[in-house]
Amino acid sequence: MYRRLPLAGILIPFLSFAQMPSMNEAGMYLMSMASGTSQNPDSWPMPMLMSGAGAWNLMFMGQAFLVDTQQSGPRGGDKLYSPNAFMFSASHSLAGGTLQFQSMISLEPLTITGERYPELFQTGETAYGRAIVDGQHPHNFLMGVGVDYAHSISGGTLLQFYYAPVGDPALGPVAYPHRASAEELPQAPLSHHWQDSTHISADVASVAVKHSWFRLEASGFHGAEPGENRWKIPWGAMDSWAGRLSIAPSSNWTMQVSAGRITHPEPLSPGDVIRTTASISYSQPVGGNEAWSTSLIWGRNHDTDTGHNLNSYLLETVYPFRHRNFLTSRIEYVDKDELFADTPALAAQLERTAGSTFRIGAYTAGYTRDIGTCKMIETGFGANASVYTLPAGIKPYYSDRPWGVNVFLRVRLKPGR
Image 1 (cartoon, rainbow, N blue to C red):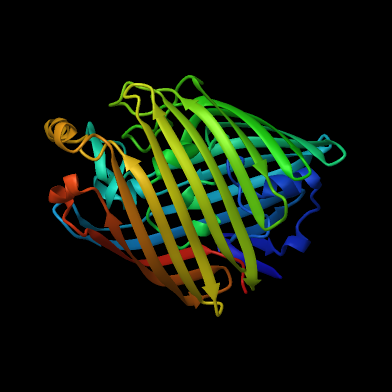
Image 2 (cartoon, helix red, strand yellow):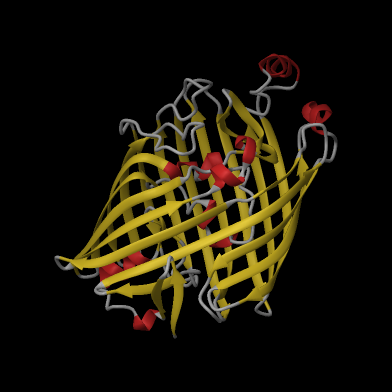
């Protein structure tokens, strides 16, 4: 199909994949990147618009939620906010390979006020000089900007180089804002800082070798997580490293194991984090532009300061049916040692009576219904609800049976059906 979209007064032609300017093997490979160098299963119909400008291949992606959250208990909260992300890439054949520029932005510094949205048992990063607890931080305005080059060297083998002032090193699964199985879940998983929080790192350099169905990568990057100023690049020295082995035995499956040392990621914690992850992702197209996508993820953090070994386990899925309906689910178990980091005196008291590490279970189920689809915009209305399990020692601070509900409107760029 051939369409024209008015953008800033310019008519931009959007094409079907078959009508794109011709791409070599390296170009096809780079077009499948989710963020940085991470990849969903090849069979997942990525919701993107494609265009050509001369010999350049252009790709646009965008998704935004308007969410109302209501939560129970003394530490629960309510808020209206908007998680969102917008991505653009441009690729061009070069010296027998393909060069690709990536960029990604988020307006969350404007659409999530107070440096957080409420999410029971969520931890990670800081706001106003204190640890964020029971809340999720917004992403930076500049979520990613980088350049990739891939070249076929022989017999199905590709060599890839990636550099990003802000980008995603070879550590963990596809980050949740880009993960196929999390497409209809606006809130971050509780295991985010155990599995994929490095997806917005500074000064990232990676090299990868792909042969047939497996890929081996190595990265260097700056380990500190973004600061409270969400409008600037969190620049720093390349002081951390990671490696990842990915396997794709068929177009429906991807698997990865990865490990890395993250130097001083949290400003209020003096230690480094040694992170290990493993994941399996599956996508099965079910007709049209939809797929049943599922991920099983494990992540483990070892804190060199506290000596704590903290594990996380996640299972999530999105199942589309009858073209306009989506069922979603996410189950998590996460070991948390920062639930009272914003109240040090209480944390010290609980360490004597209940311990310093608490295993949290989170069980989420939801539904989304597409309420309007035009040529390139898909709008849906949905909701999900979460219930939690927690140790008896911290129930006085959260209640016996805490819960949370999210009601949302979702808008995204998507090829026409």
